[in-house]
Amino acid sequence: MKRVCKTCGEPEEKHHEPDWLELPDGCVCDWREWDCHDKTRLPPVCGEYKGDGTCNCETCEHDKECHTANAPREVRRSRTVHPIVVHSESGGGRE
Image 1 (cartoon, rainbow, N blue to C red):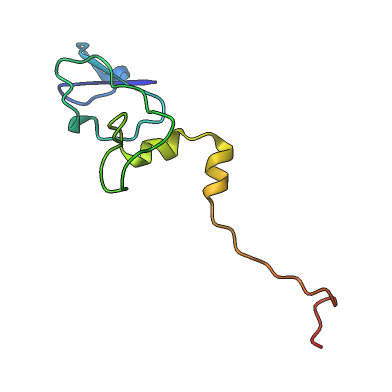
Image 2: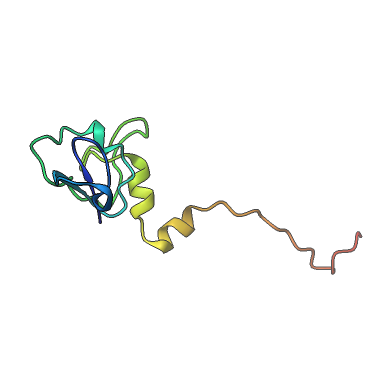
């Protein structure tokens, strides 16, 4: 988890006076879009994006990309498009 200042956006290791906002693992949102002045951390990214792809998740309010970044490796791999290779049973020659 990384922490950024809610006032200037600097990461924790570069800041001088703490006013931290904790971002959950996998979060790639622009934290400035959140109403975070009264918060110290954003909510965690939920397990599955719910929405039409043009808006934030109806459950956790994170961007769709946060769910992709936070998805388990097996799930991300299953979403990858692989080319279809067709092999001829006759060894590749024309009949």
